[in-house]
Image (cartoon, rainbow over all chains, first blue to last red; front, top):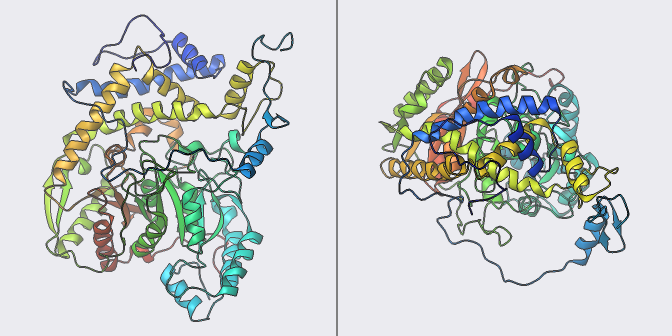
Length: 121
Length: 489
């Protein structure tokens, strides 16, 4: 559960310490998030993110020793369950293929996966 | 006959007494929308022909005298999916997207006989508090078109505040129903988490998002909540709860214990003009017989940082689905799968969305997880327990909804983003805790509306409406309408 999107640096930040990211981190996290920032965006997002992180540092003031995290919206009544049965709605499948940017027969088409698209898949 | 200021109950009376047909109501609705929409820009899309077709069907079968919502026009925030309209989230990413299914709340509106006139503008993917991050429409506050309408449900608010429709649906992840309601003189509810199905709502932060009603009166709001609430097997987090939310409307509030959290009246956070109006509103509640007690919620200040660490993390995960492959914007020149992902997302998302995804990625990264996401979830527990404790001692809490009246268009863009984020300080605790919170019109400051927030216990919306209605009946703020150029008919 600890490693969500990969190691960015080899050090771990400690709660309550000054939080700061540099342009390289912004670029790398952007890449993990499948986003490519321009040089101007990298500069702007680094400044903006550091301002936001300085606000988030406030969380470090709280003594959370022994406190369990809340990860879900609070449900104090019985949750909704349904039968674990596969449902196939052919009309919906056809409609989904219809709105896909590229499809062939009954499949959604994507560019080549293995060779970066340069030599054909 | 001027219909655009009437409540749902008044319109229903006209419909069942054959003084008005649903077709006439829809014709009048669109004629009014056409006269004011250019001024305020509430909608991303509208469909008059389709609305008229449904109106003819309702007229043909006859309006149900027992169903106040039958034949009533409604607007829906454009992050709630519909088969009959595009659903854009006001983003280039979904500019041409039409869902293959309807959200559960949309099906419920249709079952209630309501007529969906269009899809209302919002901050891109509901990320923002002014509707200025919207990519497909510019929305202005009908009370002063140099001001923002608030957000992210700005279009839903303006559609009702300007008198285009009597009701709309918004979504609220950190205040996105209540704050625009406060800026535009509306009643807006963020229901208890789980009250309304999220199936078919484009997810921003799944543990915080709720759909809720926006209206000009408290009773109209409760009627719409009755229609959209209920457990849904398509949303595992929807709660098993059946109730009539209008049940306490009209009951007096004598002896009701109302907590006033001192942190919500901090002059360093909330502007003086807003505080003055809300303090007078609290006095009004006292006059109506409520017992006012000061309470303290010192951990409120950790709400904003916890909210941004959690909501951005959830957003970064939820928005992974926009990959350029199955639906939405795609880059046609991509030579590889990786390039397709990166180019489609980079070109499809706007700047604010990218910033939130980035922050979410940082919040969940191994370097920052302990200090950000994990610490925020623990802060959330502390805040929740604090609010639950206070709500064992009082019936409801009241305070301002927003820290100021509506700012000028462009003003918050020039501000430090951290200042802008702090604008959510009074609303985010109720998303973090899951508790319900209702904004009602509380008065005016410099001719701009001020909202009061009434906050209560889990699934106790009926008491919020009881207090809101008592206040509404003792005041006439809800009867005041903005003057809009072109809207004089």
